[in-house]
Structure formats: C-alpha cells, structure tokens
Length: 237
Image (tube, rainbow, N blue to C red; front, side, top):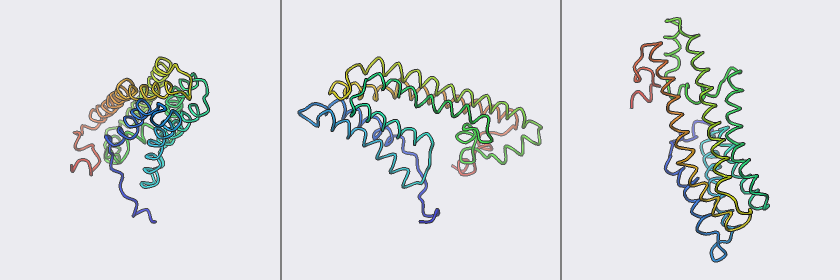
C-alpha cells in the first residue's frame, strides 16, 4: 500500500477516553469477581482494550509515535505485574517511570537538532513555521525565539515530572492489595479512573499554557495575529 492511501488521522478524544480509561476501569471494578470474569480474565480484557486500540491506530494510520509506544509498553508492564502477581509496589514505580522517561527524553532532545517541543508544538501541522521563521529573521529575533523555545522545552519536561510524581502518589495511595486478586483489580480500575481528573487534565492545562507562552512569544517577535501564524489548513477553518 502506498503512502497516499494511508487515511488521515482524525483525533477522537472521546473515543480514546472511553477505550483507554473508562471501559477498562469499569471492567476492573465491576467484572473482577469470580461470579463474573474473574480477576485474571477481567485484567486481560481491560488491558486488551487500550493495547488493541493503540495497535489499531498504529497499523491504520502508520503513526510511529514515541509516546504512544511507551503507553503500550506501560499497559504490558501493568499486565505483567498483575498476571505474575508481583508486589504492588512495582506498579507505583512503573507508573512513575513512564512519564519520567518521557520527561528525560524531552530534556535530552533539547541538546539535539530536533527538540521534542518543536516536534509537538512548533511544527507545520499547527503553525506556519516557514512564514514565522522568515519574519523572525527579518526582525533579527531568531536567537531570542530559540531561547524561548528552549525554555518552553524545560516547562514541557516539567509537566512530565508533575505527572510522574502524581502517578506514584496515586498508585501508592490507592493500590494496596496483593496483585492477582479481585481487590487489586478494583483498585487498579479506581486508580485508572482517577488518573484522568487528577493527572491528565492538569497536565493538559499545563500543555495549553506552554503553547500560549510560545504563541505570545511569536506574536511579540513577529507581530502576527493567531490566524496569520496558524498553519494554512487550520487558518482556513
């Protein structure tokens, strides 16, 4: 199949939320009893949903996403801890390790030609990068902008540090039962459900503030309005 036949990826946040958080949490909390699926089968089904959805997106849209791959690894490790009945303390370590690895990758990327914040926020799919770069050069502001972009990278890494700490605290606070038990599954489901309002939403707000910081910098250094700075396909909408 040629690249031209690969469909465009359309974000579906509500479907992602339902498949990755709500449905697995409900399965773990409501179907882990022996009168239903049992602890092992409920755990397998709950893990299969986000893992299967991630693989489906990867195969259909051919999107090799570092963060998405780490997410699938995270799901696999959670399953391993539950199925092998390892100490629940490993779950807290795993929950903290994944965002910590991403944050470390963000920091390391600042020393390369392709910092992750540039890939995720300052990219042609979101902003008219060529137009902005031309204006920055014309105003002799390129160096100042690069410094601000570097600072945005540090803020970006900070969001993952926050997520890492909160993941660890949430896991230690909620998941206290031995792995492989019905109680462990129920606690895992409760932790997954709580992770959205406690961790995901604050992290999303911080990401929006970082983008706003980046946008304010672009507006000050180029004089562009938001419509003028956006990528052409977004500006048209």
